[in-house]
Amino acid sequence: MTKTWLELGVPKNIISGLVARGIESPFPVQEATLPDALAGNDICGKAPTGSGKTLAFGIAIAAKVTKSRPGRPTGLVLVPTRELAAQVAKEISLLCGGSDIRVSAVYGGAGYGPQVKAARASSIVVATPGRLEDLIKRRDLDLGAVAVAVIDEADRMADMGFMPAVKRIMRSVTTNRQTLLFSATLDGDIDLLIREFQNSPKRHAVATAENAGEIDHLFWNVSRDNRTKVLAEIATQYERAIVFCRTKHGSDRLAGNLESMGINTCVIHGNRSQAQREKALEQFRRGKATVMVATDVAARGIHIDAVPVVVHFDMPEDPKDYIHRSGRTGRAGMKGTVISLIDKSMRRTTTSLCRGMKFDVIYDEPNFDLSEPAKPVRPGEIGAVVATLLKVESD
Image (cartoon, rainbow, N blue to C red; front, side, top):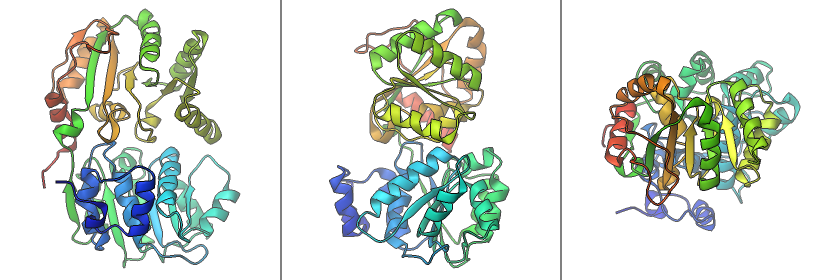
């Protein structure tokens, strides 16, 4: 039986804010980690994307951090992307509502002035590694007073080459701290992080077949020349869609084609400025854009609830990228659909990719009757996919 927020030890002022937002009970990752985190233990957590881990560590840091002196934050969250930094900072700010704890985000692609001013006045700083190191070198921030440090999506930071910077940053934080680490995998570089920067961490892994089964995975036979037409029909039927392309140029070209067909579209990729990326996210959240076209920069960097469908316009090369792209739908226990558009030339590589995820592909013709989806991969099979990739260990 699910415990209440109060039974998990969450302070009443934070509970009031959660309930006001309609978040009346915890998800499994929050129920598993919060008692240990609120008790002051280091946490080593594995959980699938969309499971609610941001709220898990957000509640912990909001409950434990105290007001800081200028330029000496008492709470730190490291994340891999600018979008994630902005979203995590917003979530923690909501959790701190009504208190005197200020939260700010620092990341590259934006001017130093406003970020420095906000960060120096904040008790909790949410940061990407590169920009944070810049602020430390400029002596705008000193991490010697950090009491709670969070390393979020550690595996993604390792994939992006940030691990040396993460280690340098953590070595500049006082050793008398609590460290909460979340990652999809806990081997290799991540294991080294755990060994160096955590003290007897409490380990939790949350990835249930129930959560995974909320997503249907469909593989449709579609010729290359017909992909955009089929995609337009998907967008019309589902009303909102995140579409993944392999390249920046391909993303721009597809967005232009969809716009010419009368479908409001926004784009996110590495060549877009921070202002452009934030505008795109806002357009999609508010429904001004029906389709968001993105490269893998958005696979883990954005959190938008109630996205009914994700489309792989171009298939990724790595199974982990497939899972993290697909995780933009079916979040927090909601129903989701993932559709991959596959032509004959892509079948062999797609079959190989899926074998790497331990499930068989069922290729079918496009079917827009949403009441009877076209032979989805069964939930149990998807549960096996997630379990295999995350190497889940039941507590």
